[in-house]
Image 1 (tube, chains in turn cyan, red):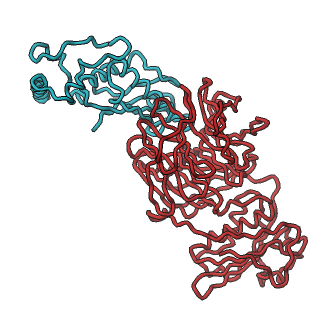
Image 2: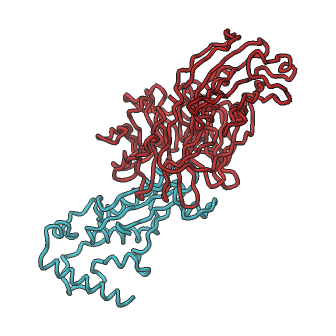
Image 3: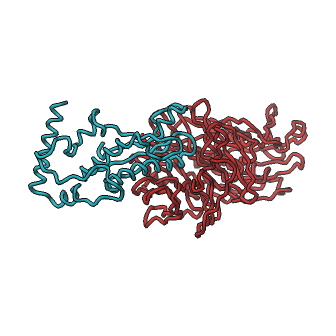
Length: 184
Length: 442
């Protein structure tokens, strides 16, 4: 595991070095630090251009491996909601913030947020409720610097329950938004 | 081919209007996948207030057929809840022609009508099926029809005969030769199936390991629109039942769902989230051209459904804080709220005569099928399940098919629009949900 991580970090440093040396049109156009900030206060402080070797490792953009690393917050993918609510609760802000930052740092990366609802009520209305939850998470990520075209909000309504019981415990598990990166 | 015929000795039709059925028996063959053998089983759990006693005599020579007709006719009529079957056994010989009918016997057995008929093989391998509906009190023929059918059309011919009897004796059109669509979930597999209204002949139209929901019949009964998640998101498809070919007609950024056909069959109303939120749009049935946005709210607007004249669009919206049913003119104009009882009213479906709509109302923790009169706004709750959903009117407006749960399993049920007659349809192999009753055959 450690070896893989080290290899990833090394690859990253190499990639950044390559960027700095010969920026392509695509890379420079999508460079995080060049992009105008969206409305609202940025949660992540603006940083100067990456200068390889001049900064501590942990501030470097994270690679795809981080998404699967159980020790990284990016491996957490579900945002849970209260009954009849699409408010992103405070406890999920760090998670949403981390993914927004990841999108910002990896401008070529895209994700879907899959909204879900509990089983009660009409299937189509629940599609709409799940959609509303998905869009609430997307909106927060946009405020935190992700581009809208990086995030597609979709909904499965009540069709893909995580909890299969017919009680509040299962329903609570099913009122959620799941983050799925492209290619996963 | 159906043609009317007049019996040798009975050329008069008394008391009832005599309608010539011009329709040609067209069997729409469901292409693609082999027929699913598991059929829906229908159980009657309630009957009409008054039932019409009728005797159905086995047709001459039907015993030798792969599919006898009269058991199908009897089951159709009994299932409607409006008929009681009078014993037709113990007669020797059985009557097959009007002159053979001994009315005194049928009067003594309490039958108000008797059905007789015959089946004769034709040189080309098909069958000539004839039946007559005899009025016991008037001792006269009410209806007589002849049909030419091949072996695979015998069940459909029996449904057609039941339709004629139903119409003659109740005054409403029969729905026995219509079809229903629904979703069966078997393990992780979802199947969109179409079956006869009595649950027989179920065929899988489409299957997927991802959910399929919201099937909706085209007004001519040749196509289905539905939502499939096979692309890991909700996409609206239209599929021909004749060729089996399907195509995505709404696959925009975000979710695409809740398709429903306009009565002229030229437009689909769908719910798209491409501009944020769930809003109602009109699209063409081949998906070409730009969607036309019909609602403009920051709330949820979903589950559109047209009135039969196409002038009104009903839908579910939570713009007032809770999900309620609204109606808006399709020509443009402000939506008007239609439901006021309770805090959760969803899934509106307008009745075929346009005078009422069925919907799902939450009462306490239960979700039930209700009907509301368009004019008086009077609401009648028709069912008492825990989770009843997806109500769908029969094309004659007399029954409403819906999904419910019995002991944790999804089953289909039907209830008459007055709440008296109830039927339950179960499928052995899985969960059944999302029923949609098809139109009258053209």
